[in-house]
Image (cartoon, rainbow, N blue to C red; front, side, top):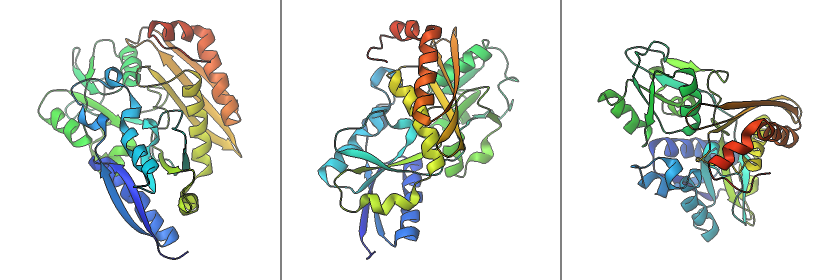
Length: 309
């Protein structure tokens, strides 16, 4: 393929830029492309004084990038898959899902190291309802409080003494070479990860003449199968940042996965769990059905969620 310019849309945060750079480096190596980053300010990055659940959820981190794709200003957009809504706008598709990094959550607690060791009443910062619900149930004596902003902002607030500990995605810390600050890694059995956490998705316009061929070599079938199962849970339950919903799948064979999912009340007073195996879409739908039958329909009704399967 002749050398071409590939314009990559990304959020402006240091982590988002680094993730876009990783994709750019892979495209240079695989396709011999020239690359250019288009740094876009998203609404989710601008509004930092309210929890995501109050301002519209994960779509706020991708909408402006998608507009650039639809306008033809960018050839690709790089997203953290945990930020990508279950349904994409007409005319756009995921051209590739890259090999997943560590999907787990990590605790940074400089003085006490683990959540178990924190004194009662300690303040723990996180931006996620999913984390809050699961961890509040495990650690009822701790305070789990909202913490927004990029990774650097969150670390500074920890250093300034606003929190005794913070919880972040391990993958993001690893990509920024900050994983040495992690003092505890939470296994899925302790805190089930966000849907798509640790995976990067490359969104493209369906009618782009070259984009799909450019990104094909970056696609990882095992990651895609796992993320497909997780996203099926979200689609079936109208998942968003307003719902404490988690799912994590691992690929166990050719297009076969083992999936865990959970749905909770925001305060952690009720946590429902489901497991399923098999074809990614079937496993995701089955896990969602189990959650609804266990009482998930009541939780979604309490949260004002409509349109779930």
